[in-house]
Image (cartoon, rainbow, N blue to C red; front, side):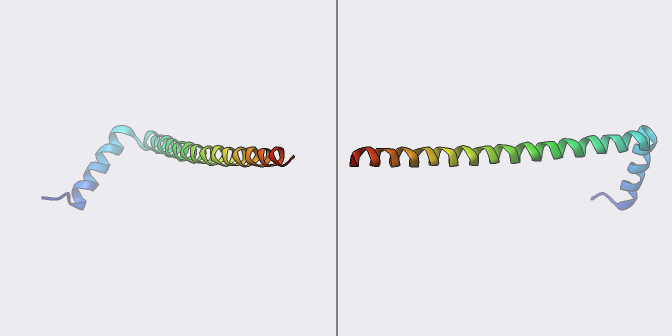
Length: 73
């Protein structure tokens, strides 16, 4: 009851006849660009979280250093 290779080939021919190769190519290109943009934005979000965490850690460390210096005086 699965889909045979012949059925897939016939479906592919029908889709090409309906939409044309140029439109299918542009659709594939647009889809690829959307996926690339999504992956890039997800990577940028993770990078910004890492930077925020490292900045927060640095500020906490600086605050502790400043309090140690003022306590020793």
